[in-house]
Image (tube, rainbow over all chains, first blue to last red; front, top):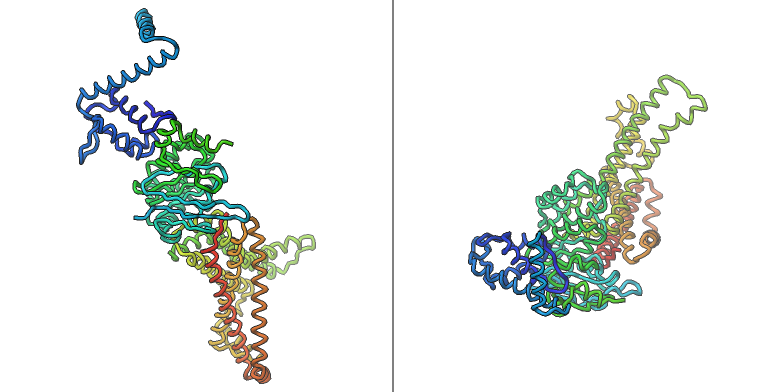
Length: 124
Length: 232
Length: 273
């Protein structure tokens, strides 16, 4: 998974989103130690202060926690991770529906499109 | 503690041309700052003044509270926008040179980076390609634990892979309490590593802001804002 | 820091001087052997070969000139290239004082001049030495002393000291003059070389004028003393003393002024392109 940034939103917000994805997909599993700010900043080619800001925000949201001596870890709270996953799924669904609305589909019609896809992939 | 770099009413006149026209600017510690402006806007002039390579016509420039001099040079690491090293020297001789004169130079860091790139210590600078020369210069400059790094066009005219290497080297080597000033007109390339940007145009500062502020307030990248501000 | 600057200055200049010195010494020896062989066998080259026969001598003369000229050329190039062009970006961002930069160049240039001078003397010795001359080495001093004394010149230790000091002062003074002219290039952004040459000519004219004025007015003031010195052979030495120390003093004063000016310009008026 590589780091990519769009130009219209703050970089720290995009970093948060991408770290969340990595937690969900298990690249950073629950309870694991996170790379240091500097390491991850270098990997993503972003400013360490920006990475620091993203980390701080993720801590506030309860997805990361700091142990004073040994560093920063991914939360062990599976429930919290699941919540976050749901939040992200909701966000995606909302965006999808907004886009469909622009094309003139209402919510029901959008779901029909999805159902058609479901059937087609079952055939394969 | 005073700001790492401060300019007050800074003016530099070259004959009839005013390269800097009353610059007031304060740079805090621990930040990576982009000094952004079109060609000929005064970026290099400002950086040369900070290094004491030219003298101000009026106003003052202070590094750590003092005018550029022996003391400021101990804490400033400078990458000029030209080949400024002796071409006949070997990489090893250059390391020895930096080690002899800069107390904060770490030869191990430098040699480590050079060996990762496969650059031999016995190579003479003049036998290296243009791109490799630029990397050697950057490695020497970033191997110092300086308080202020002044990088003049570090990514001008290099290929995308080299550009990534250079940016990576900058963020993984600068010391955390230090500030880095990167002058460039290639904004989209450096945008993600900057804390703050300073827009300079015709010798004057036209905007200073943090990158996230620009993105939050204008809903656009610094690059897009730059294009708007400097639209021809 | 001065020590380190001097060390690196020697490395930068040694790579030119050492091979040159080596070639010069080898050529001196080769030429000596060549001449020796020619004399021993007593052969003379036919005319059409004479040109080829002259090649070793031409090479030697060229190297001789190069050894002397290099001291000046390298001094100019090192000061200009290393401090005023791109390399100045490195040198002037080193944490050293401006006068240390100037001193390192000055000391190293002077040392090379002395070595070049000694080497030329050695080379001539290699060329002319015969077993008789060699055997006479212990008596050289006596011979020279007597010869000089016959001309009214008494080679005392004091006079030698005087001559060495004045020679050193004039070598250092001429480098400082070059440096001052190069420092003046900071007053121009686009025509640096022209500015340097102009400054050098100007400094020369000014110095010559000052020297002449001092000498002439000194001559008028001490008219009688000088006449008595020159008319009596015994006071000849006094006259030499006076002129050598006088001109050395003038050089010291003017060089000090130029040195100060050079440092001041490099510190306060630096203007690298």
